[in-house]
Length: 344
Image 1 (spheres, rainbow, N blue to C red):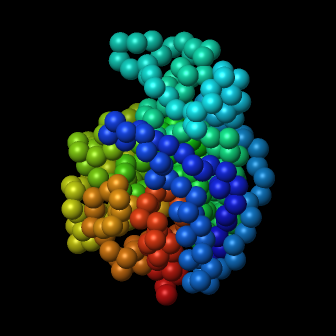
Image 2 (cartoon, helix red, strand yellow):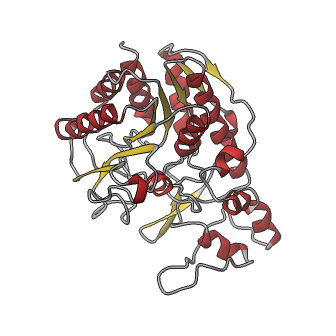
């Protein structure tokens, strides 16, 4: 299996996030991608390729154009406003009862206008990393579209929390959604997005919620008790043409393989019934028992079993890297899914 990877991800470094009232170093850090890349090499998974340069037209198919324009100018606007802090972060949001129909000129306000939390900071190299992450996903999608049975987009930053016009949860451009739309634009009649990250892929759901051509399935922690809290319930089935095309599997803290794998089995059965031309897997491994910000109990030995089950679908698959924060094990677990898919 070929992997696509960009060293430009490293420019998104030394970030901060707001957690339980404290400003702390970001859990989403460059070492995550480097541990995975090293494991790809040590396991001899296959060639590691640089991404091809793409314009932003594919991203604009699933994201609002003004949002994409905003992302590319945040750091320059932040500096122009005279800020010297370590990262650009929002601190005000247009919530219920406030106006969201007028975009303020101030960068401090725009950060809140285009986000749903304070978990998507900007530093000097953030936009280059975000753009390269999208390029990684599109390049890997191209490999699958030209005959590879599967490819691995080693994306960083991740993307599944980013919606059509909002960032959050370490995510800026929704790489999996961009790839799914790209497959549609290049001949796929139907695409299934299988999100196995611990946290619900609220952005992916929001983007495709009213569409019948992209099926979205999320296995994740119960939003009544876990981030992102405000989406991901079992009764969210899609709307309009998308009714019945969205499937959520919220599970309680402490969920281990026996229960989690039942949800995976049901999701795979629904994918089979949908008969998509390609599957995009949002590959999060923060379901791991030692993950510092998650509360599932999957073990390293479980991850190859995930790959084996996805292989049984008999469909082309694009794996897109999402979350996972137990850095020492992230490479073992993420690559374990891929080697399991390859039948090792």
